[in-house]
Image (cartoon, rainbow, N blue to C red):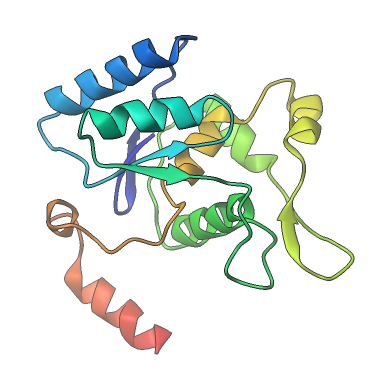
Length: 173
């Protein structure tokens, strides 16, 4: 998914099983982009490590995203839950997403649960697949853009209403 601050512009799916070809396709898209992203998150579970390594070799601004890592917040189980919680927060703050039926269906079926220690976690991906008949890949792609809470880049600041941003900052203090 491609996002700048409060706008998700595109969700692109790739059906390339070879990791080198997939990394080459992502690299080509990055090089041809008129507005370059400041970072590209690659989920590094499974074959993702190979894609991440190759993009790093190609000098793309790639960051590893291991969604299974423990969250820094003791009330959140892992980074997968944390990125979805950030996504939900940004949606409440006006995040614009593409009008995509698969994305909306997937987002509507990602639930937060609590484990026996009252720690937030997401329902299992397998359960989502059973409920909606597909993997929540589009929702995961959008949520992955919130893997880390990174500062705004200069390219994204032009899109921000600074008055609204200052009011929000004041209310967060």
